[in-house]
Length: 193
Image (cartoon, rainbow, N blue to C red; front, side, top):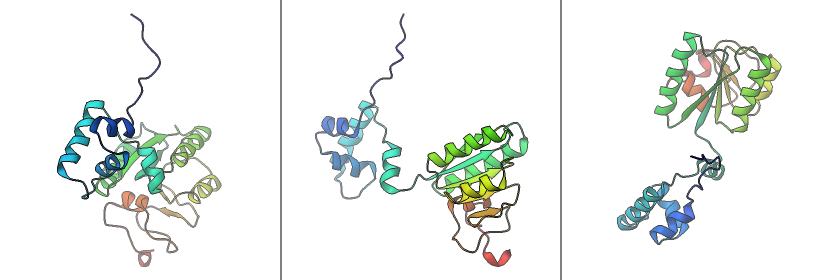
């Protein structure tokens, strides 16, 4: 038996449109849950998508929206039980707010943490939560210029970061990362600083 290393071609929105006998625009409307589509056409598109095994391209959708609905979480050490509990809470709060949490680790090694942080920035996460990082303040402050950042276990002096549960920078609104780190709906106001 020979195993192929070439992945199967993924069905596209055009494949779904062709199978359902509709336009690409109509498939897009169905995938966005538009109310402007008749139930008959909606069912035809959904049936075609299921038959083909179609999954919407999140990267393309996020590019169009200019939002990822992903919170990047960089942990220093996956073996620490504190971080397990932390990620569990972040994930629950993120999901309740319509976001996904994407966690990675740098293993308490500065070079690995820098690569892990860079990967989250390259994915254009809507916010970052950093926990237990051994990276320098300069590296973290530079990253905070690219995406709103919450530091859970240490203070980072930068204009777009928040440290711990009780402070938030007054010069920007609460970010998705702020809300995920603090729990849904419990973002502190600047007066509590």
